[in-house]
Image: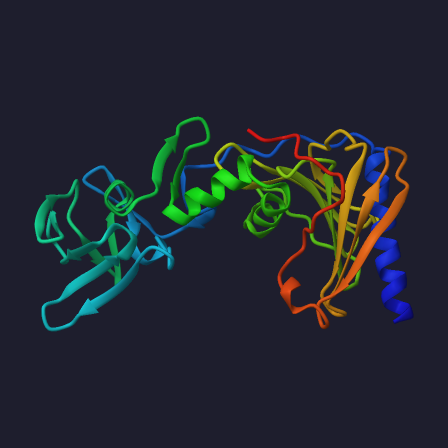
Length: 298
């Protein structure tokens, strides 16, 4: 227990320094090639058929709205969408889909490759719900399922605590910034500017990272620094946050400590939660801070 207290105290002390500032750093990461993301997750298995972007069907996961099955006898892929009272049938090689018994034309044929079924991205979003758009400046195809679209709206303009938890669950894009941690420990500390959910610091094993959620709902690592002085730093260091809130997550002890940090780096602990005794906090990192109001809604 004594070791845990020492590790946590060290981690939180490092994060407290963020409000007081760091020194300037290196050059920005290079531009990235075109990539597809579904609900913030990079999809490496994407096809281009007849100039159309094809997405792996099972990557378009949304258990609250749809389910998939396969009829081996007729070699038919079945999609059911209870909220929309919809049934979709697809077959490999066909440029049509059957939607509630009616034939719908596809931009490109259903394609099965290496046991995976691919369909036009625009078809799944327009038919099953959700959104798809191409960001020319970043060369990214952004796809969201219906639930993903709801979460994106919460992330951008919804409840502060819910938005923070969604932000922390997003996969992080390193964009060429990838420094290995040098230290040891079981505690990860997350620090958000007071009232904000779309940018934060993360500290683990002495490695500090600054992450921003961009306009497309992707979490990008903008800066990293090995505070132990072994592996250097990379990216563009952000300005100090000033007044902040922190969440210290010790996964070994299954404890969550949280509190505030003022502009001088002084920490004030607001509470501690044992997940052993409070199972409703399993997988929860951000909790409400009394008196805090969201200020970065888009």
